[in-house]
Length: 482
Image 1 (cartoon, one colour):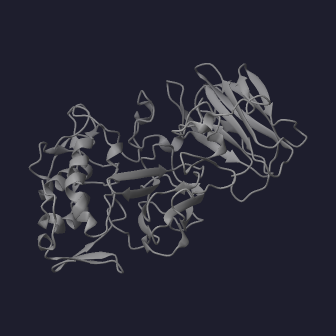
Image 2 (cartoon, helix red, strand yellow):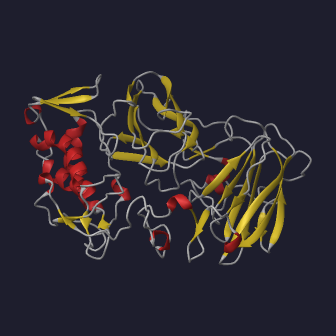
Image 3 (spheres, helix red, strand yellow):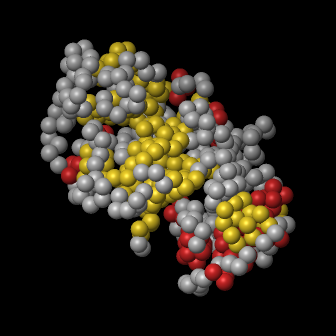
């Protein structure tokens, strides 16, 4: 294992940050490729930002971001200031844990690395980092997208001077929470202050809703609702049924972004699992919303400022046969959008969404195994792969080989072997004889990061893979150990 690196180990590599490329002797190596889990800055977005404040956004914002994008920004402010991020708009394919499209914030300080990943349609609270240098990356895959994000940053005072927006709650000496996460019976802070003094929060509104139909409204409706409200309704039906929510009156504080007063609807019994159907504010009537299963949660939040007449909504429990005709119903009762049919992923627990797919975008994971022909990836513990690779939108081995060419320049590095094993299991995944392909085990990613992380530091590049998203197993039936 290599621990100490020096310039002689990299005699032919030079970096050109202005033009986003690395030169290795006669070979030009582009930092990024817009179709993979890329490592380096894409030529169309990203960069090194050293102003004390500014903003970044997804490509083409406020229009839809393009597919297969990879952007990396390095934000540096002058010490002792720390980077503070405020994401004012977010519309990225979700839900959590954000496996397809995401906005990621990575900060490294001494021996620790903190990674936060965001997706969905609800902007997160203010992010107070503990570093003067932060890596922000945006990734989109080849399918469903959104309008992206806007993120501003500022060099904030360090120490005990961290701040949150006026509607947010601060805990743990600098962590910011949205109002919906305060007094929700789920401790989100290490100091548990978000669940303290909550007795007054749940007396005036909210509660459990059952039965074939019902209604809910903001306190005092149609009169102005009180200040500082957090109301949570949990609507439940029986298995095989879904819930349709219809708004009849709606008038909340008008805002560009729904941060102060809003109604948020969740497609589950919990508010912390990323299953947000929508967040609404202003005077526009929200659309009808239908759950995918027998549970729905509606949250109403009001701050201490402007109040309006609020809202009135009704719900109806309907059988799956009456649900949205644009949705597909699994035999387990879950409803899926038709875009998820025949896309190569088993979104239904029983796999019924990938059956009888003669006109599928990708064939389901039953394609036959084929020998590995890419020279760089021969000699692993396995010699069979399967395509198309829907994780990285790669059609065949020829396309994978073209993408892997950019890694050849790294053969001079002492850590190339663990790196080769990792990228090969990503680009040419192991074909399982039981059907489908296997992701690399987390230990493969962690070993490569441990051995190659310092080399990338020489180029001021952070490790790009999120190893924690890979299977934490050593079972060869669950993940690949090349």
